[in-house]
Every structure is written in structure tokens, then in C-alpha cells.
View 1 (cartoon, rainbow, N blue to C red):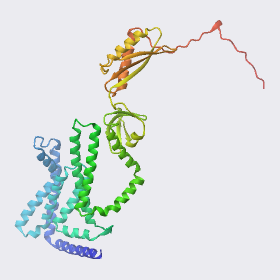
View 2 (view 1 turned 120 degrees about the vertical axis):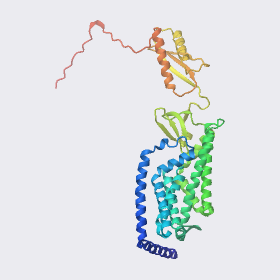
View 3 (view 1 turned 45 degrees about the vertical axis):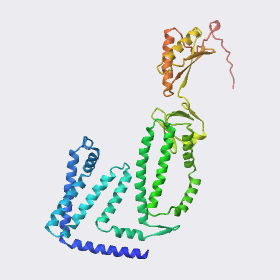
View 4 (view 1 turned 30 degrees about the vertical axis):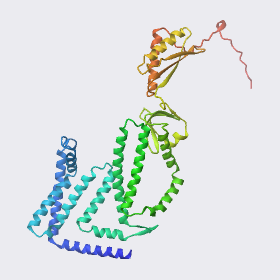
Length: 438
């Protein structure tokens, strides 16, 4: 550790002497002025290009790779213009004087070109945080390589180490492992997204099997990416046994709900009790299952709300699945008429009204029965089938409105409570008033 620190201090002192000698040269200020002028021109050119070029319509008829390249170059117009100016300046000064007198310009040109390449490569990544992290890290590595200090930086980072369970951890090892993890996880995410799109297009797989396969592929690829990344940097997985043991204790104590929801999600996918597209009622929440995640399911209520229900609740609580074995749904409508109506005619009108609705199942005849002779009138129950429970309340409303129109047209009245007050002898009896004296 002490030798590593001593070497670091010596390297810093040597670099400081080199920088001091470079600054003392008058060519340094000429190069610095050229770099500042090129940066100003690049900024002005970037503003002009963005004001005149519309990215959304740029190269619409071009091949996709060429169109993508052009749009990245336009977004990084200032860097591209700066790189061109630096290359031209380097060529001019290289032929006009000694190559060492344009060293800073050459370094600036290489750094600008490296940034352009990095922007082009990272443009295929959707995550903004990953793009920034990868861009900055890659550019720092490129910068150290350009100025010839990459080996020194690697040796310095590798000189600081701690031993944990027989594993030698250094900053260089952690950086390599992190970079490889990011790359492998990004690659596995692209592969899993491709596999998911192919699985979702398979018509011979049920929705629950599709979700289960996607989850298995994602988890398998993630584990593979971690194993590959750690093995590539020389980390022995057996040395991580202490960490995996601690993780197991943490899962057992602090992550019980997360693990329970994960296992419950796998159970739901295997037993197919619920699946995407099912209409369910869970407690007071009703709606259609729009997605099944590792920890929860999403139930769309139809009014813009989505209920996120933990998977464990679906395993331990009562769930009403309206489409578990059959999507055909029985619709029940209760109504009443007064005693002046003919009950047979009422049942006939109700059956005709329900059968005329466009969503009523044609192969199953509606049914209407007289259920009760109540105090206020006769009570009936109308039942009919629809092919899908989605929008059942709207179907009920449509049939009841049509039933109302049919009753009005045939002189059938719906009963409502009536109270009569009869007064005998023309006046109400008057109670005597009792005075209470104090």
C-alpha cells in the first residue's frame, strides 16, 4: 500500500513537471488560442445547424443505419465541427512546424473523435442514466489512452487492495466488474426483449404461459450475465459464499414479503387461476388484468385507475374470476310492475327486449320469471347471456332503458310507493292540554 502511494506521488510530480515545461513554451498559447477559437466556431455552427435542420424529418427515405448516423451527428454537431477544425489545424501545423508544437491540438482532435464514437455507440441505449455512465467512463478511458496514461492509471488502481474471504478487491477490479455487468445486463435485456416479442406473437401459447416463459428467460439471462461478468474479471464465485450466505439470511428476515410475492407470482402463472385479460373481482376492486409482474398484478378498472395488487393477496384471498373457464356471462335484471299488468305479457316483452340487444348471445334464449307478489307490485327476474363480461353494466342499462320504452308503449306501469291519509269526521281529534304549575 505504501509503495503504491509512493509511486502515485512520483507519477504526479513527473506529470506536473511535464505540464510546467509545456506551459512555458510559446507554442502552448498558440495551440490554446486555436482550440478556443475552434470551440467558439463549433458552438455557433451547432446553433445554426439545429435552427435549420429538423431531426424528425431528417433522412426519412434513407436506410435506417445511415439515417441513425446522420441524426446522431446532427445532435453532436458542435463536437463534430470541433473535431474537423482540430484535424485541419493539426494537419496545417504538422507540415508547417515540428509535430511536437501541435501536440495539444492532436490530443483535442482525438478526444473529440472519441466522444463522437461514444455518442454513436450509446445512441442505441434507451436508459438515460446508463448512457451517461457509459459515455463518461468510456471517454475517461479513451482520454487516458490518448495521453498515454492508461497503463499508469490501471496500475495505480490495482495497487490499492483489500482481501475479503480470500478475494482480492481492488478499485480496478470493481470498475471492470461494473463495466462488464452493465454491458452484459444491457445485452441480456435486449435478448430478453426480443424473446418476449417472439413469445407474445405465439398464438398457440396461453397468456399465463407466455408471461411465465418471459420471466424464466429474464431471470436465467440475468444470472448468466452476472456469472459471465464476474468470471471474466477473475472473481471466483466460490469466494462469494460468505456474501450469498448473508444474502440468504437477509432474504429470510427482511425480504419475506418480496419473496412471498415472487413465489406467489410463479404459482399463479403455473396454475393459470388468473391470466392477462381476465375480468376479476378482488375485495372491493374489480377490473381486467392488464399485466402480471414479478411482485404484483395490474388490474385496470376501466375508469382510468389501475389497482396494483400483490401476488400474495391473490393466493391467500378470495378472488372472483369472471372468465376463468368461460367468458360467457349471465346478466340478471330485477324489476317490478303493478298488479294491473298481465305477468305473461310482461315476461314476453322482457324476453324480446333482452334478445334484441346486439350483445346478447343468440344461441341462448333469455328467460324471465315471476319471483314474488309483493306489497307494492309483482317482482320479476330477467336473465340473458352475453359473450364477454366487459361492459356488463352498460348492457344492463341499455336493456333496462329498452324495457322502460316497451312498458310505456304497452301501458304497463312500474309501481312506486303511495301513502293515503284518511280523516274521519271532518277534523282531527283535539287532545286536551294539561297545564303544569310550578
